[in-house]
Image 1 (cartoon, rainbow, N blue to C red):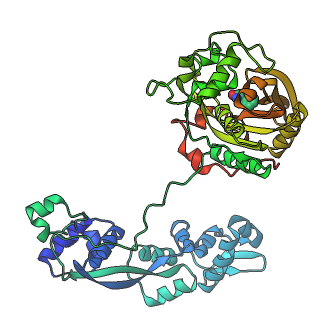
Image 2 (image 1 turned 180 degrees about the horizontal axis):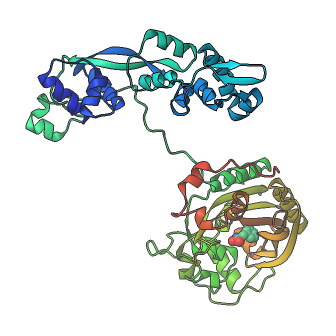
Amino acid sequence: MAEDAILGFLESNETISDSGQFAADVRIDHNEIINVIKSLHGFRLVDAQDIKRENWVLTDEGKSYTVAGSPEVQLFLAILPEGISREELQKKVDPTVFKIGCAQAIKNKWVEMGKQLVSRKVQYVEDRVKDLLLRIQDGEVVDQEDIDALKKRKLIGLQTWKGYSLQRGPNYAPKRKKAVTDLTREHIQRGNWKDLEFKEYNFSAKGPPAEGGHLNPLLKVRKQLQNIFLQMGFEEMPTNNFVESSFWNFDALFQPQQHPARDSHDTFFLKVPSTTRELPEDYVERVKCVHESGGYGSRGYGYDWKREEANKNLLRTHTTAVSSRMLYLLAQQNAFTPKKYFSIDRVFRNEAVDRTHLAEFHQIEGLVCDRGLTLGDLIGVLHDFFSRLGMSKLRFKPAYNPYTEPSMEIFSYHEGFKKWVEIGNSGMFRPEMLLPMGLPEDVRVIAWGLSLERPTMILYGIDNIRDLFGHKVDLNLIKRNPICRLGID
Ligand code: PHE
């Protein structure tokens, strides 16, 4: 609007001599006019010259006298026609009004200040100061003498007003052509690119700030756990396969084929490809035997083991599937070497989703494989590991896993919750699992597993897992969550 007004006016007039006057004429705010002038000047549609004017404006004190009257008049009016005692007068007016009022009224010869009595020397007074201030406020011109007096009393001050005078510039047009930002296929086809004005590149413009690069709290806690395992001398297992065969996920772990976890209610099976392509045949044969009729001092489960069941592909339900592959590989080496392995990665279970469960989570798993390990070693390693996470009070409860014996649930005393909370599961892998792999008889494997979500939720004070992982996560949480340092209180 302001732009049209300026360009339109200059179409039929040579100049706009005063942008302030022009703004008042077209009833547009002067600041808006100034902004448009700056832009038009930048594109040389107009030429603009600065104009400055100095105006007298009232100070706050000056403004207050336009309402209440000058102090000398206020003082004069407070004096009763028959006179008033100094004390009484002082009580009637404001202390600054009294001070200034007295000085001015005496100067004007309006009052007489006796020792006791203050009295009027004239009958009426006019408030010239107030009148002058009101006139200045209205933009009227007043005598230099009066200006000087008011300035001396700090009732008025100079203000510089800035505006422009304008003429048409070298690029003047009654309407600004909008510069085109992109050369399009249509411009080229129609040939009108020749007439278009293209916007110049602004190489110093700031781009939008990069938004990416924030870690989910889970990844921060995972990094800390990785460091702890590495400090304890553990090697990371390759967990880069979410799809696993039932064989490695269950059978190799001596989990019977009728076990409820192997039902589609608990496990996601793959439709395509529904079965695995290859398994180590001689080992498969030994696993079949140990399931059906035992061996190595075990009676087995006494059922018909089916190869088709073992071939079924699934989304791994625990990273222990990776542990079983790694232990099998270890057993294939010529000479046995002790190992400490860990992994932290995703696992999948067909569970009903609620505040604390999703159909997938991250499992942390650690294992130590060496000759002659005992349950005492497991307890010792667990104390070492968990105290590095800041959990030094541990308790163990006997538990059951198809692949470990003995098995223990791990509890830790939570100082905040003031109670014992379950933090993981552990055990010694059964001989029915290790011996068919080909590991030497005296090799024992101690292992434990826990979820990454649970400690992360406790550390970050998140009570609904859907706020931490999945499509409902608030990106601001991801952007703002603090760093994680485990085991430091
Ligand atoms: N695989 C177990 C689970 O899913 C965790 C575990 C790992 C238990 C190793 C014992 C030994 O909970």
